[in-house]
Amino acid sequence: MEYTKAFLDAFKFTMRYEVGPKFNMDDPDVISGKCGDPASQKKTGYTCIAEDAGGETKFGIAKNANPDVDIKGMNLATVLEIYYKRYWTPLSLDSFDQVVAINLFDAAVNHGVGQAAKWLQRAVNTTPDGKIGPVTVKTAQSVDPLTLAEQILKARENLFNTIVKNKPSQAKFLKGWLNRLNDIKSYTKATK
Image 1 (spheres, rainbow, N blue to C red):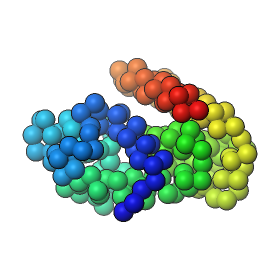
Image 2: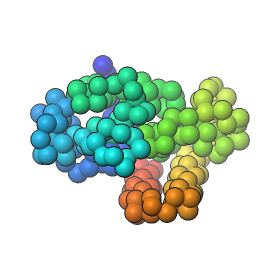
Image 3: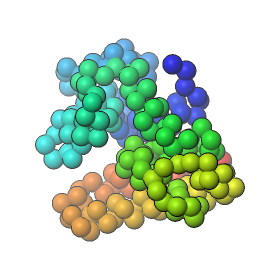
Image 4: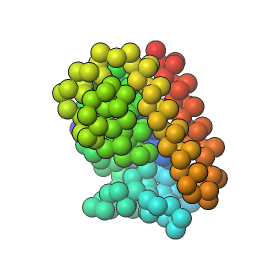
């Protein structure tokens, strides 16, 4: 399957956080999805941690959000297809400026497609139904991309702070969550 440059750029950026610094799309272990030893698990982001609400996870694809997926058996081609069909396409991200697309894609991966869509819809004052349609696309295209990106990032930051307020045990993750947002802010500014 052929993917747009915008999708691949967003995917690579998001994998920095979903997998970590060992992720490399050219690595044979990553391509095959190998996860049987600690070294390959770091390359593919494979985890199965009891405290993780997502459950078994690899390449950022969590079993609880994707119960139909064989997490351990996924290879890079499967992962790209999942992210493209389940995250990129439902948000119509090829219709947006790269700054908006990467912010929405990362938000969708981190918080779900419906939540990412609602943040965009609230930012452009369309009905926040969690589904991106032609009205939202057209309205969003008329707004400055940096302004939209900032609004999405602020909504995510507010959510992270609310999570910690309501569940203090999650405070240990806040610094990492906010680092992710700060990196997206930097990427966004560098892209424009």
